Image: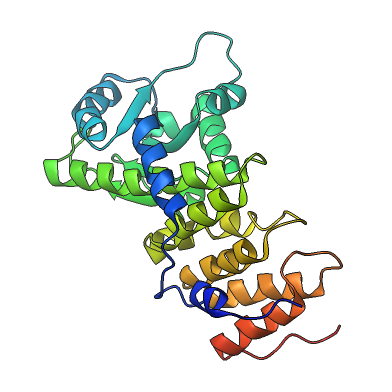
Amino acid sequence: MIPIGPSLKASITPDKMIDFPAADAVEAELANIEPLAVLFGHGCSAAAHSLHGLIAPAFEAAGLDLRRDPFGTGDNVQVAMQRLQIHGLIFHATPKSVASQPCAVELRTAADLAAPIFTLRDQIEVPEQLRDRIFLELSEPGAINENDTLYLASAMRMRARVHWVWQWLRESSRSVMEREGGVNWLLQQSPQILAEFFNPLAGLHQLEDEDPTVSALLAGLLERTGMRSEAKQCLGQWWHAVRHPLSRQTITDIFAVWGAPQPKES
């Protein structure tokens, strides 16, 4: 049984942050590896190339590398996107790009990689499969104003960094201190952005030999998303798991802090 001490209480009430030195190390690592790669998906038109030229400088200033046509002839796009470590996708939605098979592969692969996707709607109704993604509507074909460009770059930067830290935490070589620092870094990000990554973040809690403090921090991270019903569902599944690093007592304590009904035997 894991006692609920001060550090655990702090971790499940995200307004009381723990200052892990490793969180600073994560920020330093991000600074060292930037710019983060973001793919520009388009339908191979002059307007798309012009639009890329308009927004790429703002992305560069935000620590992002907006890549257009980075694939070679015969490349497997799915493999190439993993190799290039893509941390986001800007999709220029036009009739041509929406009908494009390569663009469809890029969108599907970005979703599989849990990479954030922004859609720039250019004189087209947003397809059903894109409506759950953040998008901007261009007022003129292939044109975007400065304010929207800066917003786009800033919004993608925040999400690309969260995506990088999520991938970093998935690496099996991470030490306990690194995992503590990485999760604490995530706890300091916008709840709205964390909510967009809810499923990938929930998936971080897969290590059977996870450190108890990291386990509690990960539970607090789900609470930080503001998606409490989903978080309760995840914790309930963990409570019933035969083997899981977060003890039943800890989950019971977390539910008590949340004022939620306790899980019961099925």
